[in-house]
Image (cartoon, rainbow, N blue to C red; front, top):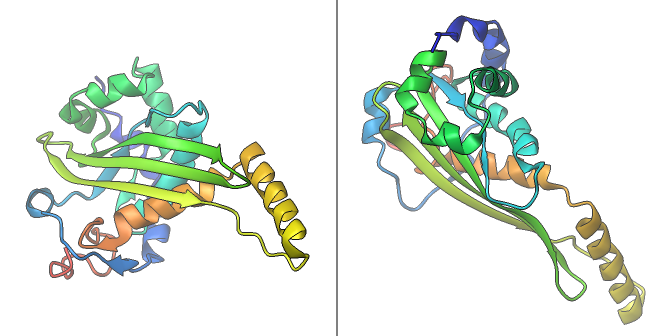
Length: 227
């Protein structure tokens, strides 16, 4: 496969701007993950490949991809433009996400010049209605593999649920009506994007389980106690 790393570098400045505005990790995990392999590889750039969708929502992968670049960039990493990545892969015969995920990470690393490859699997992306209550759920698996050796450097799992809250001063009847309306609206048009964003920020930004600060973050190399 032809090396196409140079196609993506014009977006570098945009990513650096996002990284310079990086947010600190959002909370501390009780148990730290093993970062030995991650530290040994010390990736600078991350390629997010097309998402495997195990949900029934055919639009879930595209919606999700719109939420993933920023949180990774804000941890201090160069993120290859996800839509351009998807197009280039499709042009190269890698349009099927399952095929991409089963492909050798080192081949993708060479193809794009990426230090690490981010694989994400959508386990659930759904809204369920039960007794005047709609619950929207987003469940995701994350795996980061070396673009040089193919070994897994980091993994995480996130599940987030949302149910609209009802505030009513109209007595029991008013509460029931409000709950029914809120549940119907959420069921008819669930908003997955805020949940996906929250899941991503939690996945990569939590002390002890997220991604250590990357080379474009001022904390790079100083957060070993947290990771």
